[in-house]
Amino acid sequence: MTRFLMLILLLLTAGCSSTKDPGSASASGTSMVGNWTVSTTATSTGNLGSQCSQSCGPGSYQLMLIQSPCTVTTPVGTFSVQGPACFIANNNSGQGSISGTGIPSSVKSTSQGVLIGVPSDPVSSGATLNLVFVAGNRNGNFVKFTGSGTITNGVMAGTGSCSTSTPICDGVTGTFSGSKQ
Image 1 (tube, rainbow, N blue to C red):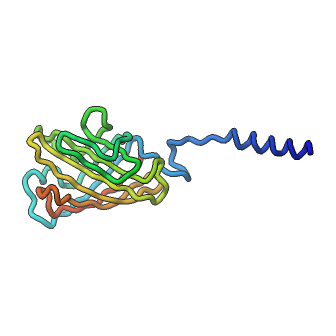
Image 2: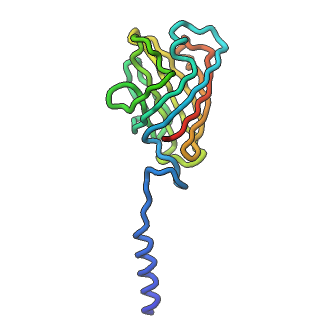
Image 3: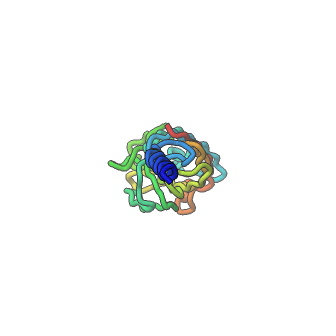
């Protein structure tokens, strides 16, 4: 009986001392919070307006994702993605950050951002992500792309297209890929 009780005590002690880093990319998944490098490609099948030529092309972005509600209000409108875990990177104060070659250098450019929704954080390998990318100017003109993809071991990839709510980029589709830094 004493040996049996000692074995149970030993098993309980070993189980209680186990720890795991929740922010790491492991068998439990990839944490979305942090720095990502993302590349995009674009193809056009429609007639693009001059505003789109500055913000609908391919690019390379550096994102600093932070936790966010799945619906956000920005200077150019309110945007939503399917979550329940959501993350944002934009150039508004205190909401992560976004920079890169895909951002228009025009002085009129005032708002770019991406909102990403995933089933959980950390994200299980092969899980689906939903995203909205928005680029706008101070005149209230903006383009909105919606997309979806997957995340596997710290790498995201997927496709997107211009939203019908922003006809300025009608006919533009593209792909994106990125990796956690």
